[in-house]
Length: 334
Image 1 (cartoon, one colour):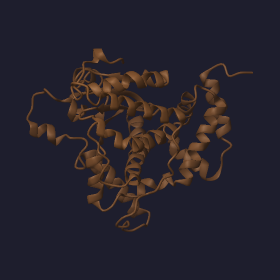
Image 2 (image 1 turned 180 degrees about the horizontal axis):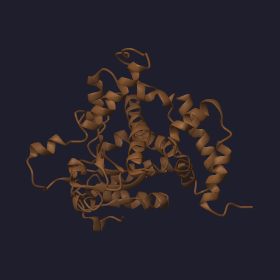
Image 3 (image 1 turned 180 degrees about the vertical axis):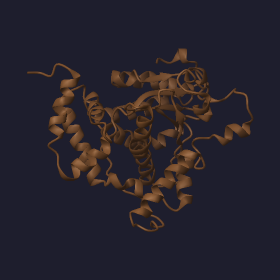
């Protein structure tokens, strides 16, 4: 007899996952943080509610976590601190605040990230640490504060500065996105794209048909900096700094809330958290150098095709007039 409802699918997956023991069971507890059904639902959504495929995906995720020692990654600081600063300066990501519903707002500088100041392993380590800090610290805290499960975030993608040279980093970006797709599925509620130049419009037009409808429904391309639309779901204080253009206030104030900066409270709290856990677990001072190596999954056929499509379209757009000119949201589908 087939599964007839989402609740039954969750029940079936829960029965299967209850059979895991030892390290897999322990790491799964890290994953769900007490919100078991909500997290089983994520893997089911990622596999179109096919219980067997979701079970396989979840087991693969748990094995990856054990093999890569993901449970201990929040006790492995990137050192020395100068190297961590270099990573933050070239991998532009931060948390600017929360939506009015309590979802963390993550800002990502897609166009201006250069990924050229450290090895790929440090960038992957940093990305996973942010994921784990979000899932183990921020989301459980907001769930407790709001009295209901909060298991997702929103992401605001700043396309300022996007240009052809970004192709040199497409392999690393593909690695990171594949890690997220396979091991952190359905953690982002909505993607808001802002400050989009022509080249993004061209790429999005050809990439969108390659994406699952579930994904494209989450992507909203906003006009300009997106400030007016974003203020419908969050307060001004939670707006990423690159969405505040045209607002009153001094440039000094705008600079002071740069959520990409290593000096931003989010990054300071995260780094302090990791260093503290390193010390309390008796590891003493971390090594001067040495990244936390994580197994890189091979991108699926869909990911490879998307990467090739983006590369081809960006080359086509290289000599297009207005390459870096922002586009109005009317020229790009939602």
